Length: 231
Length: 374
Picture: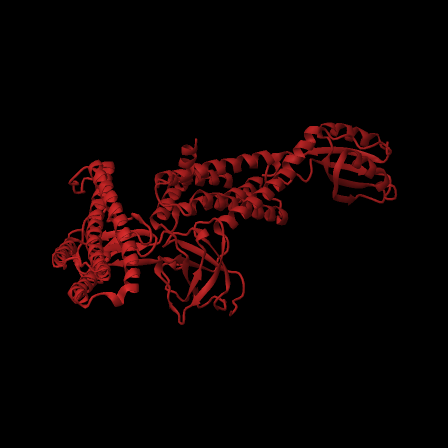
């Protein structure tokens, strides 16, 4: 068993910079920095074109690039080889999103690691990056999950009682409520649009029926946000 | 309707929130802890890189002679301080001892007859005992030389039988035979030394008696014994010289450590002062590091520093022992970037043996405490 562990940690034929511990440190630090980059991106993104895949790539790319740099270690020949392989792959394929690019880069890097006889680095990189991808899947990393549904309704009861009537109802069904838009049609009618994070998304129909039964509320409609809507 | 309580959140919804919101934070936290641990353990913070100084010493020949084959002439053999690591041919000394013994034996034949007078008899006994002691001492010295040669042969034969190195010369006798020979020699030397001790005791006793009766010793006896005493005095001086010569045949390790260079091999002739072997300590206790021009470190002796292996591991407290007087080019293997030349002030750092650094090992050096002049 210890022989296998030794083979796993010290199995590189070429020189490796500081051994398995250093490799682990490099990959873990890249993972932490990837988190910071992705979270800052998520927090500061304000446009409409938010992409979960892009954000997830921001997490995994530092880890893959860390692995690439470990393999290169100032070796220009390996660097040129990497560029050549990336260019060939990119030339023959149109990569549609950054996640796909990450996978291609990962695959190339693994080939590079094995080809340069860094067996331990290759295995360690494969395991760690796999875990990172699984982790991203498990936590739906990059998804903002700010709301589940968009609720549209028309309030006809005047502004005085609007909040006292709507607020308890919405709070009963949602954990987080945010007024997305408000359009005053005339003195008594207002179109409202809310983003809600529901307590139980399966009971969204109950919310709709309770709203429809409430005096002063009309034209209730609910749009479910799907994960895919965050392209 | 407005008074209704919030609807319950299902467990899977809670779990989903844990996965999406809590797990990333926990993962990040754990990763940071792991990074901090690995960073401090492996990379850490350092001011400079130093090299453990190799402390070595050369074993030199104390006199001219020819080197004999010796079991400890192999590279990287461990040796203890004072242990014999090489030996010069002792044939010349043995011949000199033999010649001296013959002269002493001849002197014994020239001894006058034992006088009848009691005081004269005591004086005669003193001279006779001195003569006997001289003869016995020469015999012991000769036996010791023979024993040293047999012992080397025995070690060589034993090593040869155990390892059978192809390049080793085959021993003249088997290890068992040589061991028997060695044991016999040991017994013989022990008995000779016991007899010698008894003779010394007797001589002390006789001299004490002689002191009391010195005035009664007849002039004729004293005159007869005078040339014997003079000859004994000369021979004793010669024996002392030969004893020194015999001691200088052995070349001993100057320090504990390992043989790192063999400057002269068996069969080669050496002159007094010639380097025969170089022995280096297994563990280094001194680190030489260079503090660069651009580093804001005020250097002085006795400053506290932390030293640890360049490959990570435990840090050890150490002290700056000496600070070099001028900037010097930093050795290539200690450069931060091998393509950029650097200059630095050399400092010698004293590290305890508990650090178990090997000579030549690269270490990270961190200046902890502002330098203090003792």
